[in-house]
Image (cartoon, rainbow, N blue to C red; front, side, top):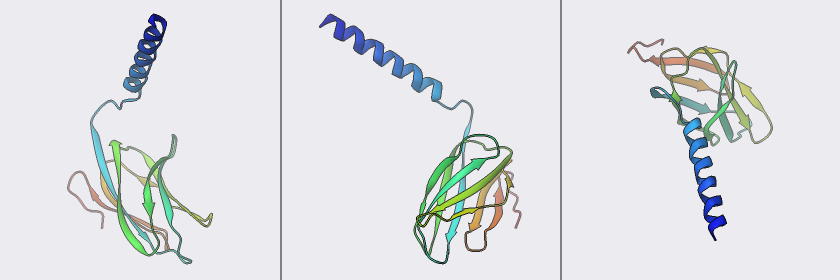
Length: 127
């Protein structure tokens, strides 16, 4: 019984350490990502936020023939990113590169693959 208690405490300590190590440091932010899923043929897509150097992050799914606002939450993205929409029919749409410094809202039409910065953190608009 004593050995089980020690093992449980050691496991809990390890999990606590790992969870603290993976906690983001610094201020967090949200970026709204308006996705117009107007693909032909229609396909549900899963959308990923992908830095030029780093690990992609899934931000949500969009059913066919709809527009949905997804949200990236985390540290303020800085530098070059792409959006990738992976369809259920194995078709991928990859956006052009967007520099995410101070970006608050982006809009992406999948059929035309047109990506636009709609609003920035400084209150400006690139429209």
